[in-house]
Image (cartoon, rainbow over all chains, first blue to last red; front, side, top):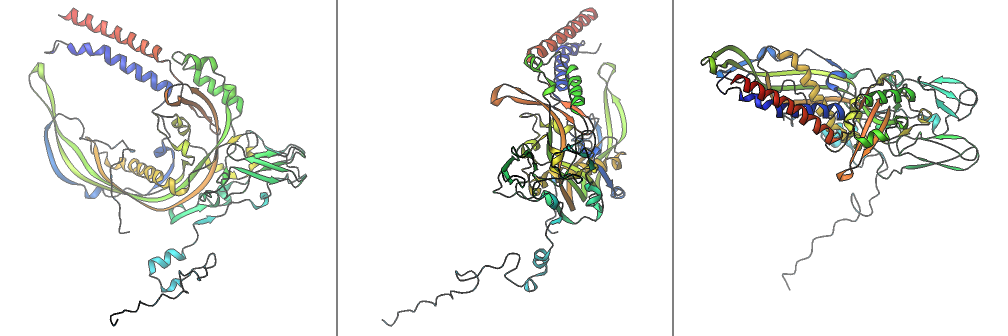
Length: 88
Length: 436
């Protein structure tokens, strides 16, 4: 056992209860479901360009985070700052 | 007095803008476009955005006649795309719009906004009720386009269908006929609910009658698009992983290189469906369950046939109330999401993930086609605050994909969660007690 004497085990009850509640609620209500248009629509794309100009801008040492801060590579629907080209 | 000033002369009473000015003829320009700057002239001289006329002139009197015997008692033969005459049993096929109007072609060449005639802006003063004068007996037959597209003359039994495209937006360019039969839809809904009985609301279970399912044609805009997108952000690659601290307090640390990334992708999308009813297009799961209907997308829209109200005989329908302009923001949002999905594979080497910070979309061209898509809908109204909640169980009328929202009995669900929580807690305490 670690220093805290395994007190984290006491969280098992509340965590388990909440997880079960949400899992069942979602199974019944399906509030998280929607049409996956990103993959279910017929998309024809030319090869993605820009990889050749990736530049190293910084190094990070000794972080405990396993992923980049604000990782949104898989969150396709989370919009970020939109750049509009007014001149065109 | 000598300092009396004469007033300036009055402007002439003729000329542009004066009460005597004769308004230009419809379709003509009051000024010569050749005298205008290039950019304005190009816009003025650009062709009308309605580029594809899908209106069925042969049906303009509201009567769809059997090509063999001339009867108007025509129905859709379920499970097929055929129409059948109930009088002489003649069967014939609707023309597929994909080939008829070339909807699948030239997406990469699309420029500007191309709108098929059924997707045009709805007339602001359009009425829901449309009246036809029966050519058989002279009676007036009214069709409520809010929920139906056909009606029968109660005197001579002619069947009338609404086929006039522009007026109120109820007539789309194309329709995708039902393939899944009612019995099949009922079975699928029953199966869906049977798996979710334990915690379902008691009243819902008592009133559950899947036979009450209704076939509804829901309005969609089917959009083809030609676009380019750029995204920029930061990505991290892990260079080192190590642990520090003693046995009891070990912690893992990472070193990483940070890269500035930029990606560009040119792409086309074929048949992206957008809800063109404002009510159905509201996908806020806190206030409705429209996401259920959205989930059963996509449909095999390539098989849609040219508009003919006879396909809707016996089914209800919902009217479109969104124009192309209203749907543009949603289209751009979905195109950006598609672009983000497309570039994901090009950043796989960034094993600590990527944070996209900026995105840009250039829509070069779009083509909009208004279409009715077939959905079997079972609904249950759960009473509650703010009018309660309408739960849907929807079956895709082509593929049979089923999705639904079943109201839950909150106390049962809470009791189950608390029971499991208590058991887990008891086990945890037992382990702790045993180890101390």
